[in-house]
Structure formats: C-alpha cells, structure tokens
Length: 305
View 1 (cartoon, rainbow, N blue to C red):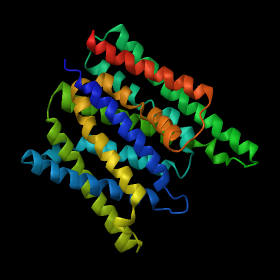
View 2 (view 1 turned 90 degrees about the vertical axis):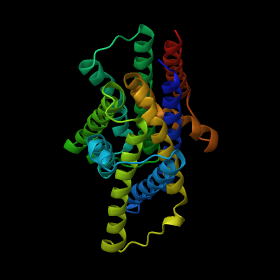
View 3 (view 1 turned 60 degrees about the horizontal axis):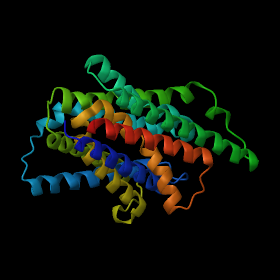
View 4 (view 1 turned 135 degrees about the vertical axis):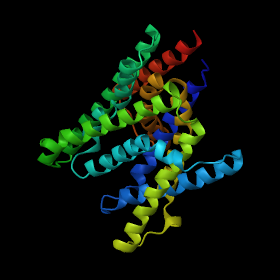
C-alpha cells in the first residue's frame, strides 16, 4: 500500500488546524450571522477551486455524482451546521473533547463493517493520537474556566447543564464520524467514486449551499455582506478547501487510520497559535502535543514496516 495517504492525512490536519485560527478571527460574537458568512466564503472558494480543478486536469464532471455522493456531503454539512448552532448554547471548549472523538468513531465503524487486520503499532498510534487530542481539549476547557474564575467572570449554568449541553457535541461526533465512515466506504472499500469525482461533488454541493445562504443573508436578512472584504474568513475558506483536497486522497488510501489522524488538527492549531500568535503553552500542553506526535510517528512507521 502506498504511504502517500499518510502524507495527505497530515497535510489535511495541518491545513484544518490552521483554518481553526482564522475561524476564531473571523467569528464575531456580536454578529448572529457570523458563522453563516463563513459558510458562504467556504462554499464560494470551494466552487472556484472545483472549476479550476476541472479545467486544469481536463475532467468532465457528471452532476449525477452530486446525487451519488450526497449522503456523505449531507453528513458533513449537517455536522458543521450542528456545530455552529451548538455554539449558541455551549462553549466550544466543552464540546471539543466529545467532538474530537469523531475520528475514533469512524475507525470503529470501519472495523465493525469491514474487518481488516491492523498491526499493534497502528493500534498504538490510533489510541495515543485519540487520547492526546481528547485530553488536550479537556485541558483547554479546564484552563478556560480557571481564567474565568480568576477574572471574576460567572459561568452560565446552561453551559454546564441541560439536554443541549450533551446533545450537540454527541450528535456532531456521531454524524461527522458516520460521514467519514461513508467516505471510507465510497472511496476505499467500495470505490463507488474516484477521489476527483468525490472532491468535485462535495465542493459543488457546498457551493449550492453557499449560494442559498448568500441569498438568505442579502435578500431576506438585508445584510451588508461584502465578499471581497472578508479577509480572515477568506483565508479560513482557502485553508478549509486545501484540507478537503488532501482529505479525499487520505481517506481513499486508508480511511480507518486516516480518520483519527486527521482528528489531530486541533494539535496543529495549538502549535500554530504558539508560533504565530505567541500564545504561552503549559507543560501539560507540551506533553500532550509530544504524545500526539509520537502517535503520528508510530502510524507513519507502521506503514513502512
């Protein structure tokens, strides 16, 4: 088996980790449609990329592929929507530990429905990466709450308790995990679509969603939304699209291992925050980052042995 899927998986995690930084910068707490504007930018960038990709590679795209691939696209777009809605009710730091388990859910589903032998080193790598990612997210939650306490800020009870506090992150993890599982089926196990056709189908579907949301913002909500003045959101969209490009090739190569590896994108966000935003990291953060890196290295070595 070619090891290029591993390279694509790491590049996906890196691109999406970098995108998270710009999602934070592009999210305005005072703007109730901020996340919808991010969706519009992602859809437009993906649409432009899809057209250029077709022209450069000389691909003839069959629109029917959008229908064939729709179950996968629907799962991804639905999980993203739930993630955005959930931010109205719960803190991201609370949801993250559960949401980051989506990669593990994908791996488990693939093992159940498509049993295959994996090495002890691969099991070790998946477990270490998943554990490190979830524990880092839990640390971020505890750290945020400690800062709030020091600053004398109160913590809204709805963030701690209630049905929504549990439901949204669980639904996100399950739906995103199932979406990645379906991607593994479509691209690797059954090979119902090629990587190129899957990529184009998803990007054009996202473009349609973006056009609908743009119509809603401009015509119905009468928002003053200017596409070419969305610097941070535009950069986030470029990084999201870059990650999506590498993602389909990673999942086509080895979905069971690629999914939890890609879930480590949060680690890259922390590292990039330290480098570019000069954020100070604790010893525990460094330990968890090193732990995840060991897991990633283990997965890379497993492909060479």
